Image (cartoon, rainbow, N blue to C red; front, side):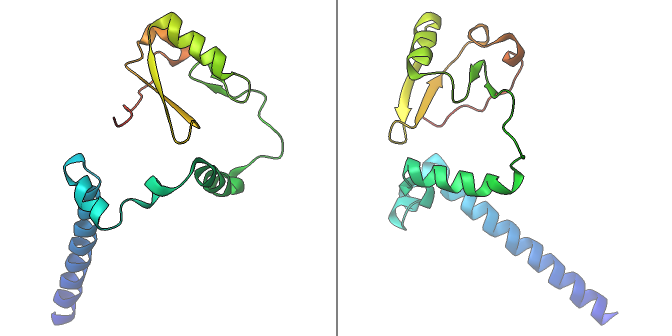
Amino acid sequence: MRRVRAGRRASIALVATAGTCVAALAALHAPFARTVLARIGGCPVGRASAAEIEAARKSAAAPNRGERDAPARPAAGFALDVTTRADVDAWARSHGVSCREKRERALLACADVPARALDARWRRATVKPWPR
């Protein structure tokens, strides 16, 4: 009976410790705690360049890569590796959408995009808002 109680206590302690660590890391990334995070060194992703992030993304995706290229790469009505920045700028102007450059001009973040501005197959998609 004592071993069962000891095992149960150890399991509860382990779950509580893991939960506390996850909650603490999540709290440090919340807007109210970013100053604390900055003082202790900041989020390591925040210091990575666009090239470093792209290299990490490619490395992580490599094991899932197929043997040949996909026939199409749609992305919310745009085509990856085909749509140009001028195309996106024209789309934003025509739909009254404001976009801003981030990550050394490697990312374009557009806020408050109306559903009508998206290709029909993407209108029901759920998109998380980009942190401002």
